[in-house]
Length: 213
Image (tube, rainbow, N blue to C red; front, side, top):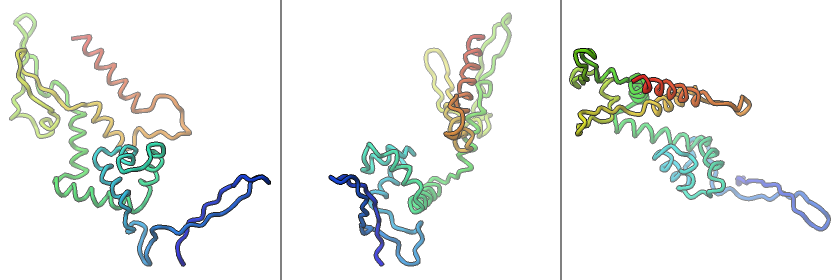
């Protein structure tokens, strides 16, 4: 029996609304013995997977894949629930991990290193106000691998040396999303999310620290 899709509409006519059912043959269907996850992706679905892996923005990926801008958000959410799309994403991620020789664990460890990093890891104040205090940088060859991976850049300019670490707030956000800490159900309070609360608290603490310098 051919697979079909049934759509029910309410057509307006002179005598009022009449319910009619429209039957369409499905363009693609599962072969006998084939699981949903094994079902081949359509060209547009394959393009969505390609685009999604670029920046993990499902809505924009749907738009770039050719779906309507008006329904891109809904289409993206629907696509990400499809077993065959998820199977393809997992397969592609495994290939990327193997090629880059990285794993989920190594990514999480680097995010944790960025979150834990602070200025005192890379520089220290030597001397006193009376004797003349100055800043000395910690030699990079004495830093642990965890501290080194948190460094974004090292520059030397007219004012001296500058050590810049990766964005701690961004690392906290990514780590929190992975752990599911910031998820908030629609039925819950519409007040500030945990993510907003954490970021706000961190920014206030940083402002107080800057004022004391």
